[in-house]
Length: 101
Image (tube, rainbow, N blue to C red):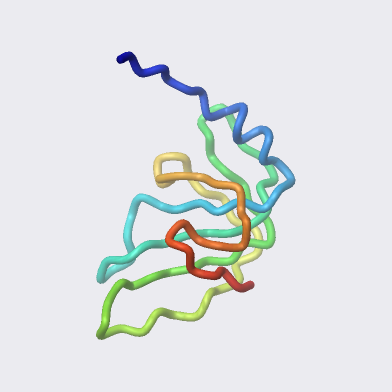
């Protein structure tokens, strides 16, 4: 069975002007996940992402620390090497949690 590489640029270009979720590779201190939900304004050949109306969601995955409230950030530029995955937003995170803005 062979693997066919897919080019992510057409998918990103199709998401311009739509709400997306971006998960970062790097975890916040103490572990967990860090995601951004916002409207994709533009992307470049390196796949850097510019988002507007962005909200940051952090899940600490810790029974000791409480998850912080989502933070509204506004305009954000995310460097390509920090991105783990990008998805069209449907109001939920990948693990099924409701993302409220």
